[in-house]
Length: 148
Image (cartoon, rainbow, N blue to C red; front, top):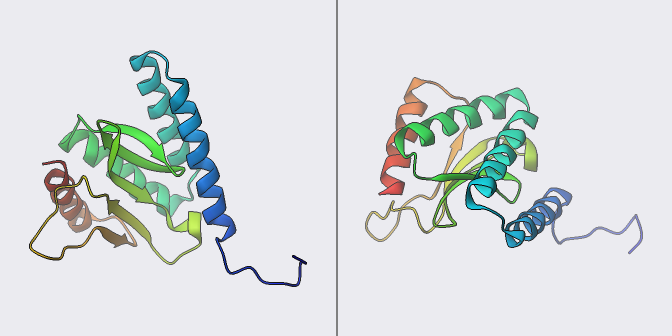
């Protein structure tokens, strides 16, 4: 493919996220002591949050505080290079920074393990432009519900 040809596959940001996920899986496969692994996962999450531009970082830090206070048994980790919180190795909630994919808003997302079921259809991702008390309250309720 030449530089002038367009590619309609994954964006550079998506390819980077997949590479980060592959590195996470490789690191996880190495195992190690459970407490040591948990500390490394937590440090990876903190490093990812620290790297974010301020607007994303404020949201990510608040989500981190919400999860730790509301559902302390969810384990912090990274998932595709994004902050995430898991139970039994399965990501329940994650933060997708706007800057990572060069989009208009960040997202707080919930995977299938989240207990957000509400009839035949329910949202699993929420756009967040800014953090304020009302958003914090809604996210706290969602995180609590998601964790069961």
